[in-house]
Figure 1: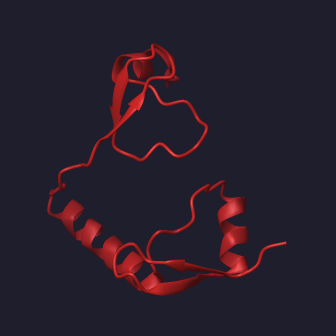
Figure 2 (figure 1 turned 90 degrees about the vertical axis):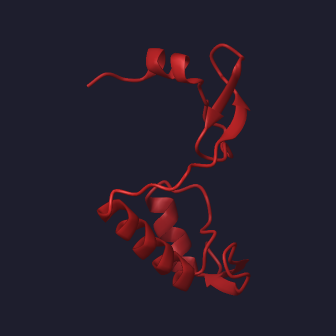
Figure 3 (figure 1 turned 30 degrees about the horizontal axis):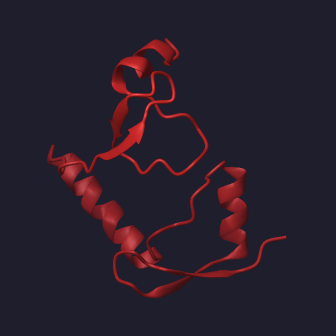
Length: 100
């Protein structure tokens, strides 16, 4: 069902293989996006993020503009909205968010 794919790393620009086994793993976990970084850059990014969290540092988040699925107003979110799932502005998200 799956075949190995060659992808290009967004960090270093090198090509890497997204294996059939990895694709199957992603599907089983419900992950919709292919990896954007090669395994080396992914590991380096993980280490950097873990070190920053340990030191209490968070870099500035890049925000993306989109349209709120509830009110139609402009929303800014810290991720690239790529899927067909609804995206909400802050106030609409508070209304539709499940409570614990």
